[in-house]
Length: 371
Image (tube, rainbow, N blue to C red):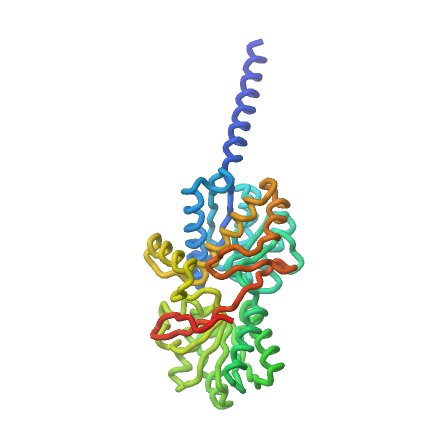
């Protein structure tokens, strides 16, 4: 009898413990954040994470979403696809996240998106731009615009400036660079612009040979669709070779002002955020970000912040916290007041929004125009 009572007591304790855990969990919304917080593109990852944290802190201070506090589960992918995949698997199987914000760069985002779709866990990348991230995956979304979208936009911009011949430097190791370059070349060619192209890989650090070759072809501009650290090296070496033509690029140039502001002077690149924008939503975000992190926000921070607004809206309008309900509500996103501009998702869950053109001026990023 005593043994029976003991077993019954253990069972009761187990049920109460499980019930308490379930009750506690029901008051929390778990959001996974996968980002490169160390490594070559850490500047992007930290910016996205900070933007996410800023908005989550604001929401939690106001009571959370539908009365539930948000718990962030943050992990460092180091910018490596396999590491991002491992993190996602842990977040789903052990941390039991309701959705995932990430990855930050395109290659890792593509790897994670495949798993998110199979697991039916909503995923939204703040900054992954490769077209294949969301294509054919109805559980995967993005806040930023795509590689083809901005590559095409920059080519059209070049045409409006009367540029007739452009050299393109493409990093064949980067999905981001390849995607932008392909779209840029296609649109530029359609618009009658002559294209000359040179290619390199992620391991290259000395670009003087291909730059010398390009200089001999007399282009009127140089399009470099890569990330800020590589762009800075290329611009430095191009300047040493006496290049006097403007540099053009995509949103990967954001961050160039940190270490390469002087050599990138006059560069114009596509983005969704300008630090000197006078829009009240942008001004407030910058003020709050500086107060919390004591630094100026990159576009990636703005995109991280906006991503949480999209998530908040989806959860508020979701029937429950199931992946299917959140996915359905997120797909209906439309007209939210965001730092990087209002948008609605297209059929592939990519946002339609205006392109902000940024000019590096006096070592700082300045608003050129919006198209």
